[in-house]
Length: 289
Image (tube, rainbow, N blue to C red; front, top):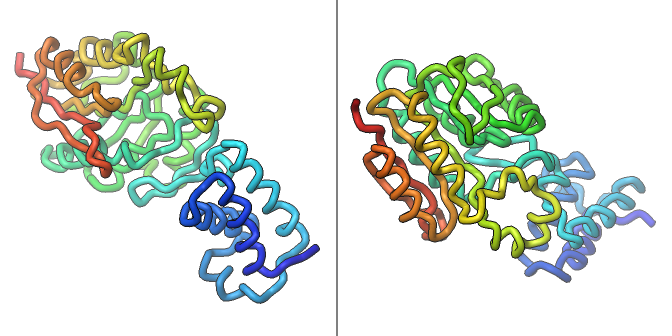
């Protein structure tokens, strides 16, 4: 049975209201309807009284059920917006979240003050969201996206191309838990949103995360701090004296992360909060030799 675009939207919103408040259900319904119809929301509104195709009418309820089962909207759409960039995402990478804007803003502010053509490393890059946002905002920066996962790097490379940043952004494989390869060279700033979920927290994750998002990008060891210890110690050789190290961290991990940085001869410059007023990020400076 075919329906008008307006009725499709209302029906889908009603279905999604089983597990979401009305506002969130409406947002998801709009995103799904635009996705299956290939129309912008403005076009959907203009065509509200028109009948959609049978294919659109059949596909929309199927996608709504996937959402109700816990599948993240970003993976269904195959894309997500972060810091003004449209990024391709799939289940090989974490979905970019607003939490990560805190560390991104610290990195952009620091990179903007570096003279010449600063070299930036986005370690544990995933989709490439942080490094690409830095490259987009700091036009003289040269950015390297690094991850141990080849599948994640394939996603990051798609996003380099999608956002036309290939002239200044590259992607390489690197293990954040090991000494960096000499091929990486030396950077003016290293930024990282590493895995920081503890063993206990891994058991308590929402199904939308535990079932769909890559555990490789989530688990940070028993106390969630394995990557901070490794990066602060090992990647100092890839950071010039006086260079900057930016970390995102989990709720309540700020003091522990700063202690790690202090032990490894970094000076804490600023600790930052996300849009929900939760402390999420820190920027530190490597002490001169």
